Amino acid sequence: MDGSDAPTLRNDLSAYWLPFTANRRFKQNPRLFARADGMFYYTPEGREVLDAVAGLWAVNAGHNRRPIVEAIQRQAAEMDYATAFNVAHPKAFELASRVADLMPGDLDHVFFVNSGSEAVDTALKIALAYHRVRGKGARTRLIGRERGYHGVGFGGISVGGLVKNRMYFGPGLPGVDHLPHTHDLARNAFTRGQPEHGAELADALERLVALHDASTIAAVIVEPMAGSTGVLPPPKGYLERLRAICDRHDILLIFDEVITGFGRLGEPFAAQRFGVTPDLITMAKGLTNAAVPMGAVGVSAGIHDALMEGADAPIELFHGYTYSGHPLACAAGLATLDLYAEEGLFERARSLESGWEEALHSLRDARHVIDIRTIGLAAAVELEPRPGAPTARATQVFETLFDRGLLVRPTGDTLALSPPLIVEPEHIARTVDQLRAVLATVE
Ligand code: PLP
Image 1 (cartoon, rainbow, N blue to C red):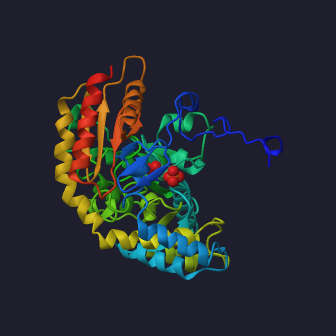
Image 2: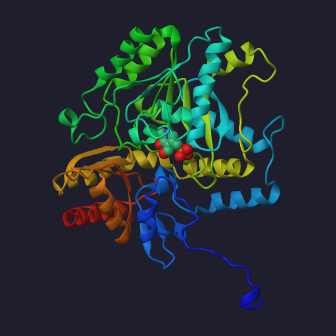
Image 3: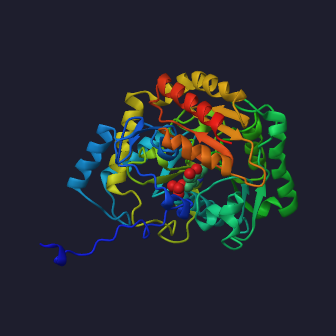
């Protein structure tokens, strides 16, 4: 075919609208990845970029792991897709059982979805349906928390607490209220692990109960460790208090573990790390090592059984997605869970935690740093915002680090870090050295 017959192929960067990105700025200086392996990404020119955020808190076993890649390849060749409505395939049952085994307490049922956002909206709907089948249909209020991130569905942004994610999109779900966030620089700056101060902030739930009456409240949803707002570990005693108040008033407690699930805090879930068992757990990301999109909701036996026994229609929950339990995702999930177990990656995260903590806190005296928070293999380096230009400094640090071969996650004026759990001490040292060097040069 000569040039004149060739179809015109436009590839001028304009068609693709990037999510959660300053598109106009990005397109002046695009950052591209072409390949990934283990702890690293590679740009199209072959430049190595150390991944200090596990993609986006997700690639917990490291990139392009052969067993996961091969499981996906095998599954694609065997059966590409099967509907999950009225039909199923063996790997969905297998993966649900494996996830149930990892979950705490009596959370032993799993509803598959395709993302963290869908997991959140699904969990909220299960909570509402549960109360309704028990004859408590007036329990419709949902309580989130300031600074919470629960994805981008209308349910998730309603219970979420990040102003920019909410302010452009109307009033959201009715009947939603929020607990105060737990970030307290004055009392807790430079804490290692869980902060000492702030358990009493959970008592705000009692005030909401007094305001709305418990009989109108369905559920409380929190991230056990708030991630996207900049890594906020829960104050000591806080989650326990929240659990106790929920129990007192028959309110369901949902842990959004989309980030904390699958080893980030050295246990399968943050629930085990903090010794507090919720009624529902949302998960995604590390479930398949992010190799195929998948999310899930872990459901307690009590909630599941109430719906199975109390539903007034043959279909107990009018909810689900075309891709729920997708065969490729199930294959990826099973291979991922095998890898976590074979390589002991959750335990590895726990054993690396003190070295991680030590290394990160050595940045305490670096320029612009006003707080450092560490827990599990997660960390936040919070910077003093530039006067009149919030987020600008962290954005510039992110861009400079990228150019120097390190990927971190800027969020507000915080740099968040969450490396794959295969991280080696030399990668941690490199991360900290790069951060120190760039903080010294950026104004
Ligand atoms: N919930 C939490 C706690 C998250 O951190 C995220 C994403 O980072 C989500 C929900 C949304 O997940 P997704 O982007 O897969 O929809």
